[in-house]
Amino acid sequence: MTFNKRISIAVSALALIGVAGTATAANLDALYAAAKKEGQLTTIALPHDWCGYGDVIAAFKKKYPGIRVNELNPNAGSGDEIEAIKANKGNTGPQAPDVIDVGLGFGPSAKKDGLIQPYKVATWNEIPANAKDADGYWYGDYYGVLAFGVNKDIVKNVPTSFADLTKAAYKNAVAIPGDPRTGNSTMMTVYAAGLSKDPKATGAKALNDGIAYWKAMKQSGNMVPVNGNAQNLAQGTTPIYFDWDYNLLAMRDKLAGNPPVDVVVPSDAVVAGVYIQAISAYAPHPNAAKLWMEFLYSDEGQLLWLKGYCHPIRFNALAKANKLPADLMAKLPPAANYAKAVFPTLAEQADAKKATAANWAKEMGAK
Image (tube, rainbow, N blue to C red; front, side, top):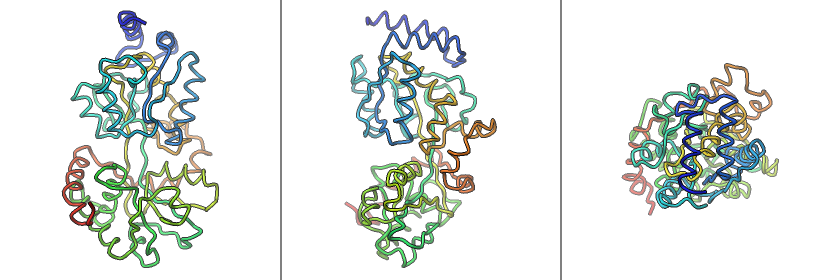
């Protein structure tokens, strides 16, 4: 396809769909036709067991035949996705991502650097204002809360809080996902521990309180100096470890009772993390990208994320419309725990990140 032809298709689709995203059955058909001419959607960093993305991708391909989904580096991180856009600004080949799914903090910087383009889906008004860019450059897609998985073959008395984990009964048992200086989920695990000590703390204060918590856990021997993961939990190396609830719930199902696993949302600190979607400013397949977004934010797409144990960003609107299937909700931890969730702002996360870089190694003796 020539560049001029690609631009022509994009312009015609925008005329029908519009930046405002007022999609109807008729203009969705027109967008699909334009996307089908492009023939491909290139995604990146979407592991099939993360948030149910395997089912999401399969459902998109089934609903829109004729659009090939080219999946780049499923195990990449948010930073890798941003770098992939930068590296392929002038490339319309298969290594250039059309869409990204990244942590909340990457949205404003990607917009500032001109790496993403605006688009508002039909259900735009049901995305909370604090989880989207007002101009449509990025928008929240789902969220999870930090929880811990417990190997019940080894841990007979299941803890329910950060406070419980400090008890002698959990010596050599508790692990975090990795290094908070390089992993967002680990940094937010430290942040959550800080909130368990002072629920009103924010930013660097919460982070530093969290470092103090984990330093004490290390000194008591309760913290295991090994990265927590599903294999280590199953083997008993780290019988208790932290991660996003959706990863732990998927792991629980995959283990299928061998060993039996409980997933606990701590009662004394519930921290939520939002991930966002955006379309590359250099997307080789802009109409396929827009069609992908319409699918993800439709009822069908949102409920597929719920099936994968992620809370879709339109969760409240779906609940109000009685569209949340009871069987899916029954597989999640109690709703009352989620009601306590704290959503750290971008400014608070940036403040916490600076505190992590300044103090984690110094206090924990980490290299």
